[in-house]
Length: 205
Image (tube, rainbow, N blue to C red):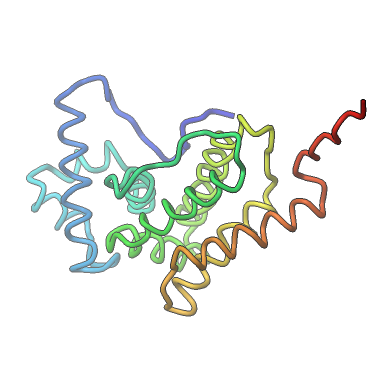
């Protein structure tokens, strides 16, 4: 499977002018989205504010779901992204904090909710939502490679699920203490299932 998400169109991204145009459009979209909402983020408005043609928008993003997909995955830096590591707890904790920080951005939060809400009746949004999950799951497993641990779909959901539930359903704060508790419970589940490497017993003399 290609590492490039199928929704992500990259027309001549080696061209600096195209890169600048794309970056400017995404910046304007992030500014507009919390203001006008996902339904108000029309290509007509975005083209006007970004000073491009609608044809330019369609060359980069065939539909709004594709635009929201890139807006979510190519968001601004909101703190340090985790580094690969051999300590599963440390990697998982840092990854959840990065997830929390990303969703704290109003545009990304709005885009995630919009894609999720539209997925039941819009095939493009459903496809984008699935690709977002696959992209983030693969990224987490990449971070975990030095530990020798690779998590499956269920184990991935058990890690991020409580954080999204707290943010979107409970409308509560995701504190560092909450994240620590989630990771502790998650590691316990992995240990019981045998997904974590067992420590070697000391060799007797």
